[in-house]
Length: 235
Image 1 (cartoon, rainbow, N blue to C red):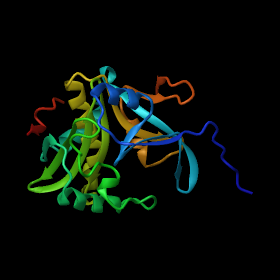
Image 2 (tube, one colour; image 1 turned 30 degrees about the horizontal axis):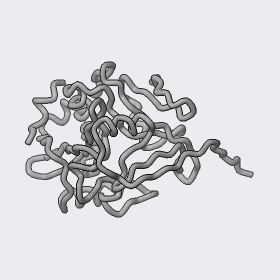
Image 3 (cartoon, helix red, strand yellow; image 1 turned 90 degrees about the horizontal axis):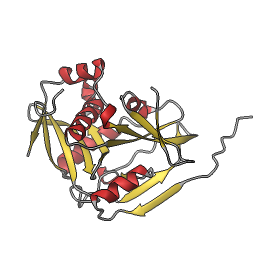
Image 4 (cartoon, rainbow, N blue to C red; image 1 turned 135 degrees about the vertical axis):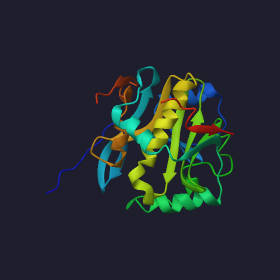
């Protein structure tokens, strides 16, 4: 007989995405909401490999963030790439990259980038949206999307070409977003969630200044566990 997992005080909420003031984004992120396509969502459970598990929202307190030795190596390993910071956009080139990216996953495969990024207004809903487009020569090999609050940044989504997996492009863009957020004087960087069981999201735990949301109390608690401008051309 297999064991049954019971999750009490279930949270499973969705709301249509609307325009927010920067302070509004700060507030909903602090409450465990995240941006998903045309919606705001928050939930304290999910499934991984067909098993029920708890969802743990994560953020980084930027005053405590600094690069580790291995993270600096990731930046150096990719110093041949061109990274362009620009207003977020949704186009065929980014959709093509998403099609490559989603083949990495064997469950819950979304069919379009619009499942994660607002297709019509990626640069303005719910707040100002930016992207980091990563090029190898003229080829777009990764693109991450982030949204700006007054004191917080939402690391909303990233797609990359898995044929360049040795470059750790998801980690690379997360590190660059962290550095940009810190350089902008923001207090927090929200980079999604992990599970209470090992999963594909565990790379998000390898960050100094990491905090996790306690769903019962609403508190964010510590979770134990390079100059930007030479990297990024802003347009």
